[in-house]
Image 1 (cartoon, rainbow, N blue to C red):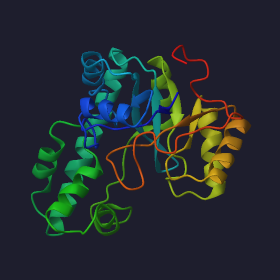
Image 2 (image 1 turned 180 degrees about the vertical axis):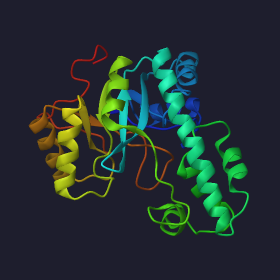
Image 3 (image 1 turned 120 degrees about the vertical axis):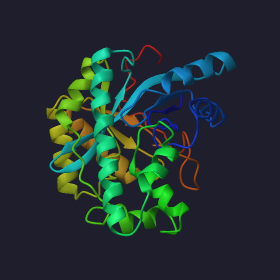
Image 4 (image 1 turned 135 degrees about the vertical axis):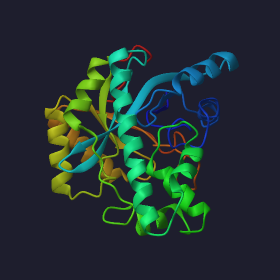
Length: 278
């Protein structure tokens, strides 16, 4: 089976609807897909309805990606097989959404001081009720010609230390792991090489994530090398974590797509090794 356990819809900062995402997953040969929108489970019902209505050969994993705080850094934790109807979990995600709104308001205020007015209404329109992320801000700034690309936006305006950057006040990483467990799920450290940490700090992150009760770590994404995969799997073995795979799909690009390059060798213990759908 081909698994992709990290993907996004327009319920957060992806560009496809839940129905479009599951259809694309089937086109790409994915057998099991986790939808892991940022701090929301809003897309899961529509995705499951689309699978049932279209009789798609796809197993949907209930997921979420929680933004957390660790050592003054923003670290993302994916929750897999969570109960999306758990009232306590939904209330906790709502607190994250409130943090997102407050952060967006401050980002817009700072950009206005730099002669970029009326950003928040435009961003809210782009988000259309979805979880607001910096990606929405980046898309808007590209749309109005303030930058040539999404990467350019982060270099000029939204990256750490830039005009529109606002430090996050997310839940602590260890607490988010507990949230996921309380909702019946498995906690996965997302894309550990994307945080631009030194090798020493990646090792420290993996160690403290495991100490907090974390269950697995993403060791494969479309752009990771075999050497990087082996190094991350060694960290998993050291700290008793299983391995997860995920494209972190937001939209199709030349370097990323659902299910792309997501393979594990036989010496690796996958996060799904004891799941009933295996």
